[in-house]
Image 1 (cartoon, protein in one colour):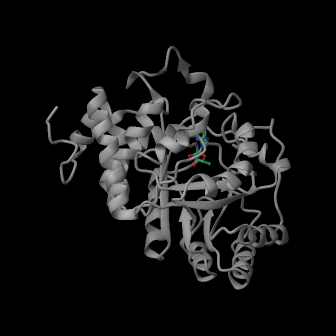
Image 2 (cartoon, rainbow, N blue to C red):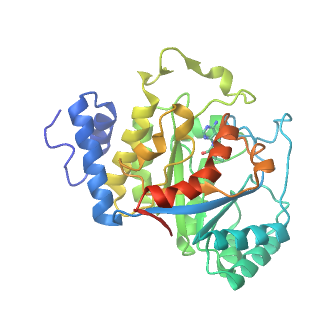
Length: 344
Ligand code: 5AD
């Protein structure tokens, strides 16, 4: 490996692929340390703690990997009504949060007009920053929601490989996903995207393209998480696990390490972005992987404030149930344990 690759000013695609393939322990450590330094240089030491409310698990989409896909009849569906969503927001502010993420499946029960009202009411009664994560809408709707006061919007592109995107998302178009992201940017949203790592059919080259796309689109927030097979989805049967993760295009690999590398490289390439350590990490192993991610480039942590009786139904991947219980305790512990954690 080129000795100076890690510290290069700008990575080209081939550099990223080489870094994703790194196997030398000392070199990997150097990559993580560099990412941590870039995070500190551009974002400071602070870890942002944000609240997330999963207000509906209804979804009109049928993404092959996702536990709340429309065709999964095994889960109980719920919706939190607008008045209740507003109460949650007030509670989030009382708990000390400064940011609330409102997330749901792609659920058109909530019309733009309904969402506008919810957002206006929350913005008029709290000083919370509001993030929406509700899937694809039209320019006109995104515009309405922005004018109502929404600050940020999350819409992961999941994979930048158009063919894989099509295979995983029946009746969705990769080109529309990217159009939505461009629309959100043009409308002035702080815009978030993200990917899953370890998808069957994914290649290191496509991950390198994902990282470069974050930069090309000038994405502000980037959620990188492991793909976790969900037994009630069509994709689960395609996934093979034998002494680590195996994906034909990549071979055997350690998913935990691959994720850290993707986060670290994304931090180095995108510099001034918000990178959450997503809950999916903790499913990978018993160690607190999220904490490790925070030392390798990530700078945001999201805590679920949805009432515990509903949380288990927002099962996009298995084991989220147990995680949900842990999440609430974390809130108390966090501020005491880490002086760098702040509600922002
Ligand atoms: N594993 C990991 N992440 C998943 N998501 C959905 N299903 C899975 C899964 N099986 C993530 C996707 C999507 C969000 C709703 O949850 O990134 O954007």
